[in-house]
Length: 247
Image (cartoon, rainbow, N blue to C red):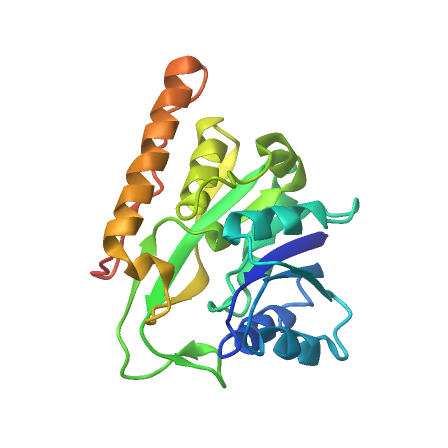
């Protein structure tokens, strides 16, 4: 199975090596194609990615001027090879848990009609960047929330959904997932922890008021789409809180 994983990067020199290591350790699960799109970083992110590319031909780096995360994600989609069968995403400050791809790709092997797996995310305050696990003593919580990294898409579903909305500065991931689920794809809500979401001072979503406005905007977009096209479905089952996790 050829799996393309798209990773947008902007000034993540501190974290991107760990993110890439977390993917490389899963090369036994699939024919990995890791597409890194640097969105005009001004720190050492590009050098860090190039360092990781040594001996890892599955990592491909593309550079562009700073144009925002939606355009970076779209640039990654455009770089997928024709052989790509499955698509996922990982942000450059997050971690893909060991065994994540092997577990969820098994659902596709069992059901050739399956279009999407959507799994859990664990929000972590402190990561151990050596073990790529949540650090002892830190706080964490597991949710079924909004995360592109929680999904593995069959390529045909991505092609049908199209590109990210480049007018959105935030919430482009929520908008994309709503557009996917509105079409009622054949999917599994798996119990795999698909991503360790690292909470830190640089998270865009820490800008609470901006994030809330972006979320409300994409919800309104979804309502307008469904009003214009009654065949689209309301989105249910994306949000579920476990282990006492909060925002």
